[in-house]
Every structure is written in C-alpha cells, then in structure tokens.
Image (tube, rainbow, N blue to C red; front, side, top):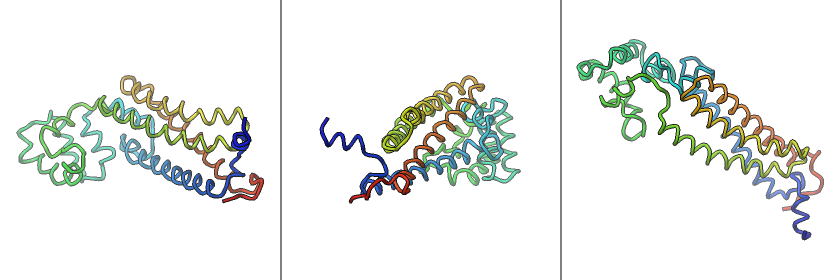
Length: 249
C-alpha cells in the first residue's frame, strides 16, 4: 500500500481540509433540509388521505390499496383536497359519483363545479389529470383502487434510483467518521435495506392492505439511520473533540 493510500485510509472527518469540510457540510445541510421537506410533503399528500391530519395506517391503505367503499373522487374530496371546495360543492360531486356519474348531469350541474373549483390547478399545463373533461371525471368517479400500476412503477423507479444516490453520498461521508466499525457498517447498509422494504411494501399494500405497516417501518427506518449518519458527520467535522490537527486548505 502506498503512502498516499495509507493517508487516505487514515483520514477522518475531523482531519479533513477545510475545503472538503465546506463541501461535505453544504451537501449534508441541503440533504437534511430536503429530507424535512419530503416529510412535510408526505404529510400534506398521503397524510391527508383519510381526511385527518397526520400520517396513519389508514392513510397508507387509502393511498395504495384505495378506499373501496367509495370512489377516488370521494377519497380526495374528503381527504387532501377537502379545503379546495365548499362543503356543498363537495357534496354534489360525491353524490354524482355515488349515483354512477350520470352523463346527463354533467353539462348543466356537475361540469361547472369542476370548472370553477378544480381546473385552475388540474389543467393541461399542470400535468395533473384534466378533471374538467367528462371522461377524466368519470374515471375518477369509479371505485377507488388506490395508485395505479403505472403510477407505482414510475414512482418506484424514481425513488430507487434517486434516493439510493443520496444514501450513497451520505454513507460515503459517514464512512470517514470515528465510529464503532460494526455499527458503522450497519448504519451505512440500513437506509438501502429500508428503502427497498419501503418500495416493496407499496406493491404489497396495493393487493393486501395488512402490509401497510411495512411502509411505515421502511420510512422510519431509513429516516433514522440517515439522521444519525448526517448529524454524526457534521459533529465530527466541526466539534473540537474530533478535530485532531489544524485543518488545511
């Protein structure tokens, strides 16, 4: 092993040059804020699937398995979209869905409600379903079976590819921390394992709602492991306890 390799292997976060500390710190801080924003986004979308604040097992079941006692339209109007329309408008839309979404009511009664309350966001430019069109509205007025296979496939590959890169770079920085070797390996591997569990649980819940617990466990698991690695890395880069020599530029 060359002297350069030995120096690299012996490098710890506390002994890094200031330039690398600044680079790694900026990355970790942005990732930390990003993780918090992701958590807030989950609370505002999936967390309102059952119409109540906070993420629950019912929220996960409704998101992936669906609320099969009613339509997708009813689920969103009593859940995450509840605040976007007055109570009487929501009642009329839900009743229309429960009546089988009759076409004859669209032009004079239901269509204008969608046009006024929904199309400002659900339009061709937004990329969201254009619910102002009868065929789209009738589709979401059918029984709610949760996320479609196409949506699950798209979201699954985005999560697996994108979040795996985040865990790789966080783990690469944490690998230089002064930490128990066994626990270091466990912490680095944990987010990847729980990420796979999280994504697999979506597909299982789509067919068997009892697996919704796995989604909760997966999300909590990789969030906790990532937080420990992130906070440990920041602490060891800047706190005097781990700074063993004068940093260089």
